[in-house]
Amino acid sequence: MSAVVLIWSLSIAQALLALASVCAVIRIIRGPRAQDRVVGVDALFVNAMLLVLTFGIRSGTSLYFEAALVISLLGFAGTLALAKFLMRGEVIE
Amino acid sequence: MTRLLPFPLLSAGLLALWLLLNQTLSPGQICLGGLVALVGGWLFARLGPPQTKVRRPGVIIRLCVSVMTDILRSNFAVARILLGRGNPQRSSGFVEIPLALRDPYGLAVLACIITSTPGTLWASFNPATGKLIIHVLDLIEERVWIETIKNRYEWPLREIFE
Amino acid sequence: MIEAAQLPLWVALLTAMFLLVGAAFALIGSFGLLRLANFYERAHAPTLGNTFGTACILAASVLCFSVQQSRPMLHEVLIAIFAFVTTPVTLMVLVRAVLFRDRLEGRNGMPRPEVPSRTAGPPG
Image 1 (tube, each protein chain N blue to C red):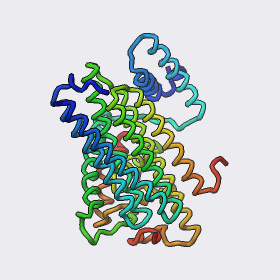
Image 2 (image 1 turned 60 degrees about the vertical axis):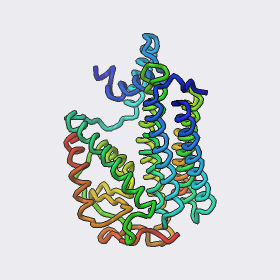
Image 3 (image 1 turned 90 degrees about the horizontal axis):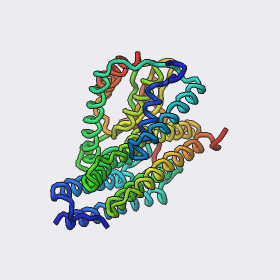
Image 4 (image 1 turned 45 degrees about the vertical axis):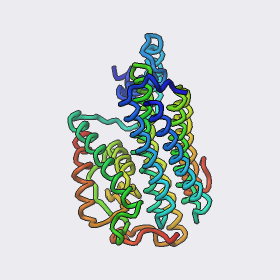
């Protein structure tokens, strides 16, 4: 019984997160200016991290946790570099 | 003590981070984590950050609780707006708030709180005049926002850091 | 695959609830990214998934793993702390960059010091 509950809720949650990623990708493609695309990239990183966490719960290993940590930190560094680039035109001064 | 551990809170945080990442409490990992914490504290001291004192643990706990409840409440409020259930004449805009808080750590924490709460964004701060500009998604009355920020967040932060 | 059979039913139900609520909030936030009208409003939307969505899914993960391995698994707290510290930094730098760009291009996005403009930001 609990296996059924867990599998179904995991599948639905993954579908919702995939849909959220699609929304972020649409904003990246459409986004009229560069900053809209950067916000889309940020949201995409967060959704990807949450998706990896649900895969971790599904597989029962904590290896996915490290992947999620790396994705969230890379998302931070990447978005920060993009924002800095928008402000100055170069990342490292 | 101050030579060995210039930033005790930072060192304790580094040790906790190391133990959480390794998911263990074995003596060997505690030694390694302690080494990381010591060296991390020295390296941070070399950067010459401004010193500060954190006071009033009771106020810290109360601030944490009120921040969490505010984040939870505004999550639901913003979700209602995004789903189109809100007021159709909703307007967003900038609000200007005069701050008396000057401590750099206090300002950093305030920035984290304001930006982490859905519906408010930290836009700019002028350290000379102490004028903070935030962007609010559902702006009903500016005065309410100014009162909220000043009473709920700025006052406890001044208690803690100044 | 998880050995879900050894999980008590209440743990499975609680985990399922946390997962669904978290994923729903992340979806609402990303949906708002499409729906809102200008940049400053859109920057609010992903915060939803960043705070409550992440917290719920992390809670589900902590609960599931702690019961499975019958000891507290708390390392998910690290992601929550990193998210709380890093998200404001990126958003703040981004908003400052956009204010700078708008001012440079002469759009009326920057609030004037005396009268904060009620109509936010540039169109589009």
